Image 1 (cartoon, rainbow, N blue to C red):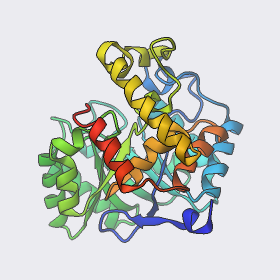
Image 2 (cartoon, rainbow, N blue to C red):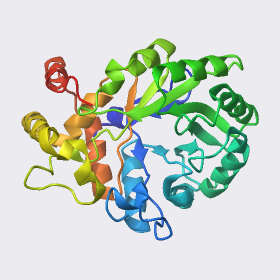
Image 3 (cartoon, one colour):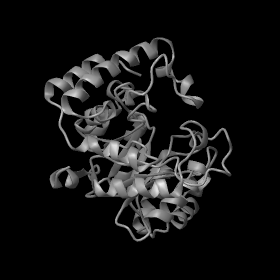
Length: 323
C-alpha cells in the first residue's frame, strides 16, 4: 500500500474532523463471557477473539491508516468499549461510540451514559457520539440539545445518529443547527446486498445536508466475502438471514460470481471489491468489523486499488433493488 493510500482521508460531514475512507467496527471486541447468549455481539458472528488477536487487528488497521473505531455502550454491555479503552490508551485514534446503553433508556440519561462510556474508553472526549437508534421514548430535539450540551462541555467532538430515516435525519440536523452544530453522520446498513439508503431518501438527504453516511454491515454479515454458498451456509443466527436462504441465496451466488471475476482482475478478494464499491461512493464511509489481524488486513486491502467507472456501474446495476 502506498503512502498516499494510507493518508487518504475525508471530512466527516461538515465538522472539520478528518476521518479515513474506511473505519473499523469493533462490536464483538472484549470479554463476552458475561453477556447474555442472545446478544448479537456474542452469538451472531461466532465466538469472539482474544485480546491479543484484537490488539493485532488494531495494529494492522492503524498501519494501514484505518484509525476510526466504532463501538457502542450496548455492545457486550460495555465490554467492547472497555476493550477499546484497554487497547487504544495513549494511541492516536478516533473513537466513535453510541448512546443509549439499553433499549428503554430515556433521553435524560445521556449525560451519565456518556460519562460511563468515557470512563470505559479511558478518554476525556469521544470523537463521534451517535444516537444508536430512534425511539418513541426519546424526542429527537431533546436528544440533540443534550448532544449539543456535551459538545459545549468538550466531551464530544462531533454528533451523529444511527438508523435514522430521512425525516428523522432532517429533524436532528435542524435541531442541532439551532445550536450552531453540524450533524456529522447517519450510520445505517448499506452494502451491495442492501441498497435501501439509495431508494428511501436517506443517502439523498445525507448528501443534501452534508452528512456522512457511515455504512455498517458493508459485507452483509459476511455474505460478500465469497465464503458462503448453498453448500456452505454460516452457523449461528446468520443462517436465518435473507441473504443465506431461498431466493436470497441464489441471488448472493450470482453477485459473488461477479465479485470473484472482478477480484481476479485486480488481484484482490471479493470482500475487498465489495468494500471498494462503497469507498468510491460519494459521502459514504464503510466500517467493516475485524476480530483478527488477518481480517483487518483483508479489509485494509480495499484501500489499495481503484474500480473503474464501468466496473462500478456493473456492480450497481446487478445489485439494484437489493434490500
